Image 1 (cartoon, helix red, strand yellow):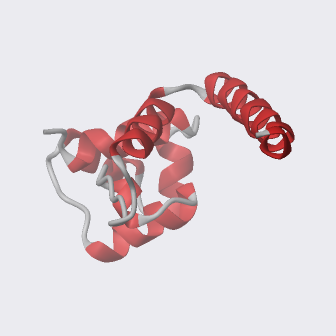
Image 2 (tube, rainbow, N blue to C red):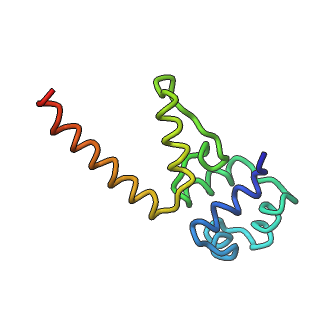
Length: 112
């Protein structure tokens, strides 16, 4: 299981922030960010909320928790899992493909 520090470092890098930039946004030193990412210290809930706000993600996403509602079936869960592993280009391509499938399906609904 991934530690919170490694998860935060991964997200920071994916958002292309430097530790110094993030530290400035959080009003802490770069050393605090480094210590959290290396697992020397752990962020408290208030810091986690600030991380989530900066990254514009939920706390569940921040800590790597996947939550599916009771109405999600296995296919939906697999689709979401694959999408989460994609880079932005892959997500855009997938969105285009899904849009085409939905349009095709809509045009065929009257023919059935």
